[in-house]
Length: 97
Image 1 (cartoon, rainbow, N blue to C red):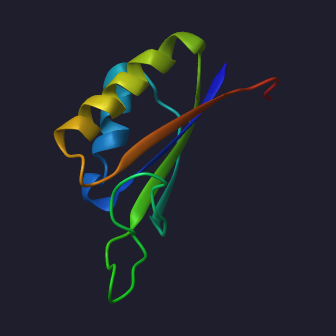
Image 2 (spheres, one colour):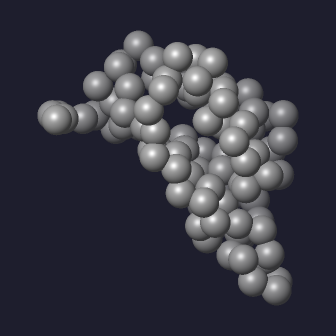
């Protein structure tokens, strides 16, 4: 099992969650209106006068075989609109209940 954290521009709104459902991922936790700045490219999303946009994020836990499909979906969307900022991070989950 893997955990995947996806941070994205609020312009994507529910598009990321909808795409995950198409892949067959049902469960997730979503945060809306979070601030942040990418480590490599893109503008800050701080919700202030200078940088008014915000981010959303999704955390999901999936079987290993779903990871590549999710990362490919994220990569394709990011390549279509690189200025928006979209990143996914994967880590191993040792146990769950």
